[in-house]
Amino acid sequence: MRETHTNADMSHQNGILYKISVFFTSLKNNGVLPTIRKISQRIEYKRKGIDFSTQNIYDLTRTGEYQEHGTALVSTSIDFLTQLLNDLEKAVGKPINKDVFVDYGSGKGAAIIHAKQLGFEKSIGVEFAKELHDQAEQNIKKLNLENVHSLYADATTYVLPNDISVIYLFNPFDEVVMTKVIENIQKQQESFESDVYVIYGNASCTVLRETFELLDEQVYPSGAKAEFYKI
Ligand SMILES: C[S@@+](CC[C@H](N)C(=O)[O-])C[C@H]1O[C@@H](n2cnc3c(N)ncnc32)[C@H](O)[C@@H]1O
Image 1 (cartoon, protein in one colour):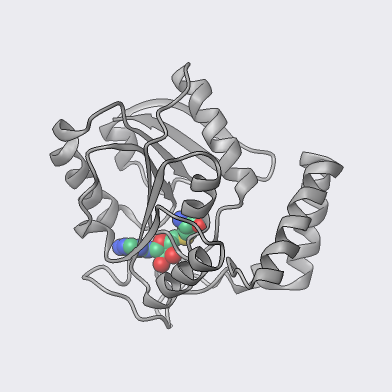
Image 2 (cartoon, rainbow, N blue to C red):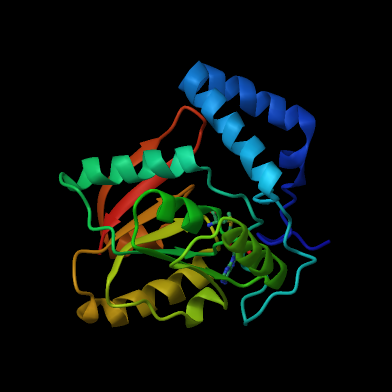
């Protein structure tokens, strides 16, 4: 198999040993109560049939020109998104506007679902793998959420809404796609109605750093990283 971003095998993250190691890391880093909260939410999601599990994408149906430039699906947890939004507000120095949250490469919809639960009026995800988008739609339906939308599209074709507040990128693709996405954002910048911020998790390319104002960057005890930008 040709080694590309897309072919990265992340399926070990669904194995029992990986889950046990995540449990002990969470106990160590977050303490007992947050770990119990996390586990009870997992159980609740399992009961409702919500699926945010890690998935390789090389055998999925992908739309658009950049099928070999995307990363495997790893979903953002609600605790991690909470942390990221808190750190963004710290970096900005004031509460951020929570009109619209957009996730480029939204997988099974974890981040857009959590964003809505964390107070955004509306959240939109753009996902190029059909099976992941379908699962996102099912997850949204099972949780009975309004104003949470998964779109089946390539990220480079997406036009942001004027009332966008936060753009989220959880290391979804390489610099080829990132460059195109940033060019599109720049073209639309004039029409944004308020300040727009970008959270770039587990950054793998430097295009954002070369384009927008870096407000802060963090490395978390779990090893995850994030960069925070103002457009
Ligand atoms: C690391 S996962 C992040 C999932 C989600 N953002 C979350 O945090 O739960 C990256 C996702 O980006 C998607 N992706 C990769 N390239 C894409 C593209 N060009 N357009 C849209 N989605 C893409 C992949 O299919 C995968 O679901």
